[in-house]
Image (cartoon, rainbow, N blue to C red; front, side, top):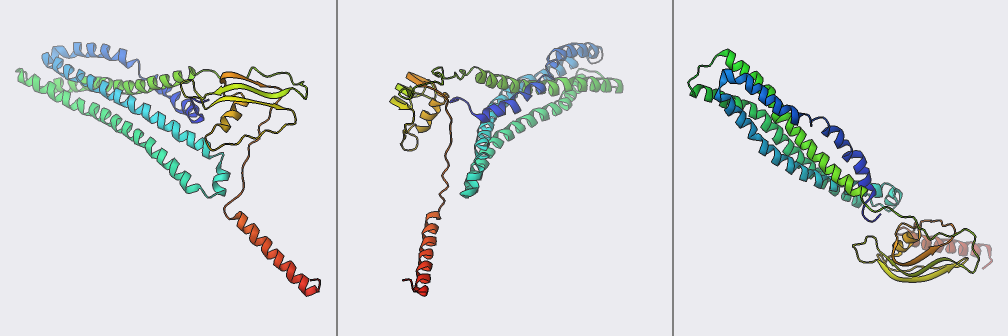
Length: 330
C-alpha cells in the first residue's frame, strides 16, 4: 500500500499491458530481414557487382543509429509512464472528492495541479514523438541516399546505366528499405516499450503481499476484555523508511471512548490504517477483537457560515423584542 498507488495500477492495466499487442507484430522482421538481405544481394550481384555491396553497407550503417534511437525512446517511455502514473493518481483522488472541491470553490487550484501534471506528461510524450518522427524520417531518406550511392559507384566503376539495371535495383532496394529502415525500427521502439512495461509490471508484481491482520479473535468477548490492545507498536509504511509511530501502548474496552489528537502528519491516519490491517506493525503486537467498521468524517463549516448564523440570530432577537414592545408584553 505504501509502494504503489491506484493511478499506477490503472496505468499498468490501460497502457503498459497494451504494449505487448503492438510489440508482437514486428519481432519476425529481425529474422526475415537478414534472410531478405542475402537473397536480394544474390539477385543484384550479377547486375550491379561491388556497387550493390556498397549500398548494403550504407544500409546497415543505419543500425547503430536505430539502436541509439531505441534506447532514447525507452528512457522517454519510462519517464512518461511515471508522470502518467502521477496524473492518474491525482485524478483518482480529485474525482471522489469533487463534492468537497465544488463546495469550497477549489476548482481553479486543483485544475492547475492537474494541468501542470498533464503538461509534464505531454512533454515526455512529445519528446518520444519527435524521436519516432526522426527515426521514420531517416528511414524514408535512406532509400534515396542508398540508391544514389549505388548508381554513383556503379558508374565510377566503369559500367553503363540501363533502364533494366536502374528499375530492378530500385524495386529491390525499396522492398529491402521497408524491412531494414521501417519495420525493424518499429520493432526496436515497440520492443523497448515492451521491455519497460515488463519491468514496471514485474516491479509491481514483486511487491510484498498485503497480509491480513492475523490477530483477529472471536466475536464473543467479555466486557472486561480489551477490544483493541497495542503493546509497544512501531508502524512503518515501508521497511526502508523511518518509523511513523513508535512506542504505542493503549487498551480500548467495550463502551469506552478514546480520542486521538495530533497535528497534521503526526500519524493519526497511520494508526487508524493499522487497526484496519493495511499497515503491519514492524515491532510490538496489536490485537483487534470482534468486528470493526470505519466511518469517515467530513466537516461542513464553510467560510462565513458562523458569521451568517450570528447575524441571523441577532436579527431574530431584535424582531422578537420589537414584537413584544408592540404587544405591551415588555
